[in-house]
Image (cartoon, rainbow, N blue to C red; front, side, top):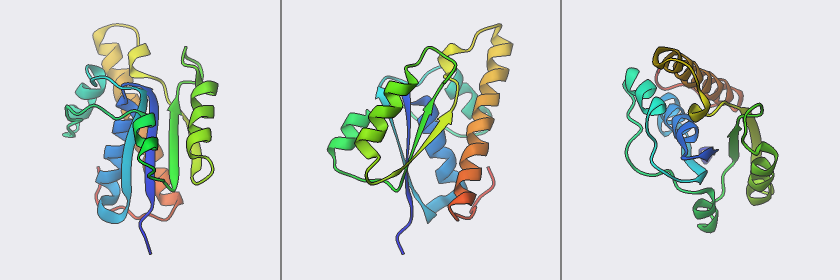
Length: 157
């Protein structure tokens, strides 16, 4: 039996997607194949890097590939998790429609409402606290989803 494959996708720079990918890998190890992509590649900086460093996970310096680069390879995924902030300024409908057009025929597309780190406002401490909350929410959603599809935990993160 082949292991399930999951693509985490978000809009800007791929911070949320990379976090989902890394949590999936940490939780399930070799029991699944996880990847990430975004619509607008760029370096992941600031809050996502800081809050992941707090728990000992390095986001790395590699750019998250664009969803178009991933799609052109012809690789398919069992699941595609589209992360977008429904209440923010992101164009969630257009974003999710594109994800569905590209992957919907061969993948189960999931829609997670996850705020973008770049939209957090307030003092530095408030932003760090809210960013840690976003990180923890992504972690909980990944853990819950993996349990739902029958992937057992190999490690506690």
